Image 1: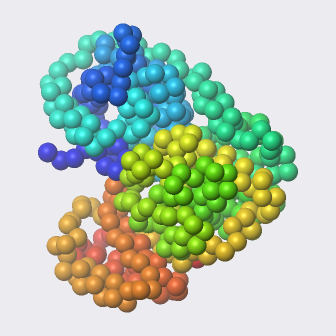
Image 2: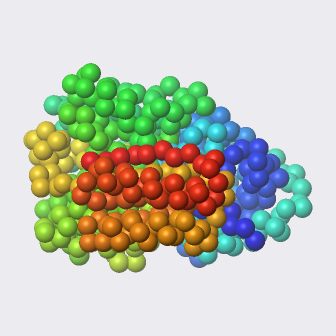
Length: 461
């Protein structure tokens, strides 16, 4: 049976399998049955409830309607409306729910959508539970769903999440001297972000707060930082922050217009937590995509790095297993486990702004001594995930370039778990050489699979 779940839930194009009404209703039935029976959930005799949120995509309401048909009669459904993904992670254990569902494709374009599930602890469901849901969907595939769905209004809970974020910011600080640009990606944070940061004292300018169902992540947000950099310069801002479509990640821009990714934020957070005594076991969790300079920087300051596979699920699992307090990815997924057990872009912004306010320095000078290697991530569009080991030209080029980089950089290639892309990450001391290596590998891959793939290069100096 083909796996439905990728690295972050189920992704696809609405109207195409698996995002068709019959499957979605079966999925809702299977998920609600298994979440209510999950070993981590205790109903204490009351009817189990499930919290549901979504981002601003036009396809969200239809997906919710079909999921609800399958859930109806099995659980109380609390519709939290448009709300960041990590808000559901926070609210599920807070409200003693059996689980949560978020309808979002995160950073993907608007034509995609996705479904993410959380267990009663507020954690993304385990691989084991994903597999059980996939098997259970078959059981419901021929059933008719006749119970009329009743969705309880849960939009009031957005305020509880906002109050939680505000409570994290130290009471002895304020942002009254900070001018801030926010890019909400026309996504899930578009209503909540401005009042949160204005409430902390900042002067706020906003981009990406006019969603129309089709412009989420389009020319804005964490993956398109050009508008953020322009606005930071135009408003003479101290810092810029861009969220992705469901606000579970954030990237930053300093007052000079230089983008600061998750590696930079992790370094800032690790040093601050070490100083405050909150960095458990003097260790952080990184992924294989983190810049090699970050591990060296942390090591020189007495902080160990545990490296795991790509994906915030792997980061979270490592934090839980090893009882650590901080981890994340260059993409901007950062987990501050002391506060929340999943990545949260807005929480990351609150913590980073607290560090900036404490430092009394410009954001460009908050982290002296950290100088990442140039890194290029080249994304090659694919029509199918041909096993890489079966591609002769690709394998030959990989061996050649690995030999070139040996001892002087890194090369990492994988298929994306959320998009039809092959990701080629190359890191080394010289940016032009790194770009050349990434391009050579992409050319070899296209030679093996066909010449219709197109690539997009993201460079970092």
